[in-house]
Image (cartoon, rainbow, N blue to C red; front, side, top):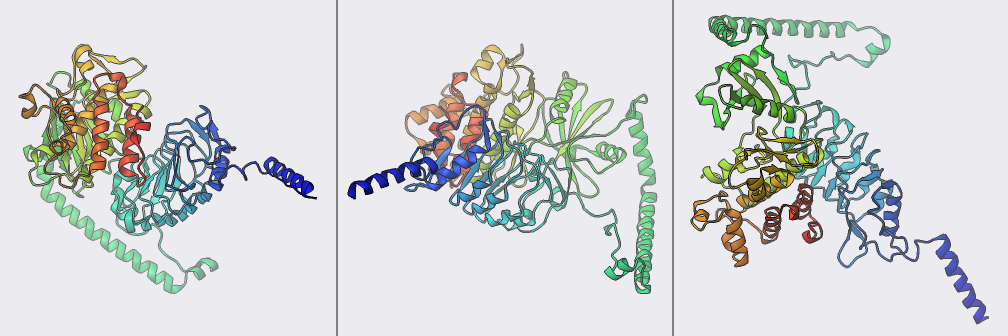
Length: 595
C-alpha cells in the first residue's frame, strides 16, 4: 500500500507539471508576465530569458522586484522595438510601481485594467501607436506622479479624474488627438500649454484657447425637455429667448459703439502706421503671416502692426543674427519675436533652417514656433514667450533668484528629453550643434525648451555632417569636432555633458578660475573627482543638493564628455538613466544601462 501511495503521488506531480506548467515553477507575478509577453511582438527576442521553468521572474530582462519579495515592482522595457498590445493581465501586478514601455511600436488601447495597479508611481507609454482614450478610472492611481502618454494616436476628452491625482508632478499628453475642454480642476489646473501641445482640438485656460464663442455666450440657447418633446416653444420660453436676444443685441451695439469710438480716436495713427508698413512691403508679394503649431488667433494685419511697433524697450535678447523682442497683444497674449536682419551674412540660411526644422517638428522641450513673416528688410520668427528667460541668465546673471537643486534636475531631465527627440525620433535625425545654457529657455514652471536651430543640421544618412567652418560655442564643443569639423549626435552629447557640469557647478565652461590652470570645466571636474573633493564641485548657492542624484549627474556628465566619442552614451541612454534615477520613485543602478 505504501508503494502504491508513492506511485500515486509521483503520478499526480507529473500530471500537474504537464497540465499546469507554471504552478510549480513560477510565482503568480511570473505567470502574469508570461501572459503579457504572449500579446507582445518581440522581433529582437529581448524577452528570450522570460522562461516558464524559472522559479522567479526577478532576474528577467527589464524586471525589478521588491527587495526580499517575489513581487514585481518595475517593468522597464523602453527602446526594445516591441510590437503588439498591452495585455489586460497587467492589472494582476498589484505591486507594480513603474511601467516604462516608451519608444516601442505598441498599438491597441490602454487597457482599463492598468488602473488596478494602484501602487503605480510612474507610467511611461510615449512614442507608441496607442489609440482610443485615457481610461476614466485613472483616478484610482492615487500615488501616480509621472504620466507620459505623448506622441501616440490617443483621442477623446481628457478625463477630469486626472485632476484628483494629487501626487502628479509630470504630465505629458502632447502630440495626440485629444479634443474638448481641458478640465480646470485639481492638479490639472497646475499644468500649462507644454503638457498639451500638439492637440489642436483642445481648448481651455491651460492652452490659452477659449472654448466659448467670441462674445462669451453658449452656442445654443437652452430649452426645456417638455418643449423639445412637443416640438414647440411655450410662451414663457419665447419671452426668455426674446429677452436673451434683446440683451445680446444691446450688448453688441454697446461693444460696436465702443470699438467705433476707439477706432476713430486711433484712426490718424493707424493710417500713418499702415502707410509706413506698405512702404516697406514688396509690392509684388503681399506679406502674409504663416502659422505652424498652435495657430495664432490674430490676423496678419494685426500681427504686422504689432511687429512694427516693437522698439528697444521690448528687446529681451540678441544674438549673432538678430534681436529677440517681447510682443504683447491687446488680449495680453505674449510672444517672442526673433528679427533676423537681412544685412547680416548668412541670415537667409539661418532663417530657412529654423523654418525647415521647427516648422515640421514639435516637442514639449523644444521652443514652439508659431509662425513667420518675410519683410523686405528682415525675417521674423514668432515663438511662444518663455517667461523665465535663458538658463545662462538664471545661472550667471540673475543674483536675486537661485536655481534650487530640484530645478536643476528638472532642467537636466527636460533638456535630455528634447535632445533625445531630435536624435532618435526625428527622421531624418537632427544634430543641434549649439547646445549651451543660453539656448535653454525656461517657462514659469522651470520646464526647459531647446532653442536656436540656426546651426542645426539634418542628417539624411548615417554619416556625420562635415563643415569647413566649425560652428558652435567654445567650451561646449567636442574635441573631435574641433579637430575634424565632423558633427554628429555624439558632438551634441558632449555639449550636453558640459551643460550638466554647468548646472552642477554654477560656473561657465570657460570660467576664469579654470583658464588660469589651463583647463575648462571638464578638465577641472576630472581633477576634483580624482582628488575626491565633491564638496568643491557643487554650486555653493545650491544648498539642497543630495549626494545620490549628484553622483548620478556627475557620472552621466563624465561619460558624455569622454574624449573618445564612441564611448559616449546615446541621448536615449542618457534620458533613460535620468528618468530612472531622478524622476522615478524606484531608482535602479546606472551601470547596467550605460555599458
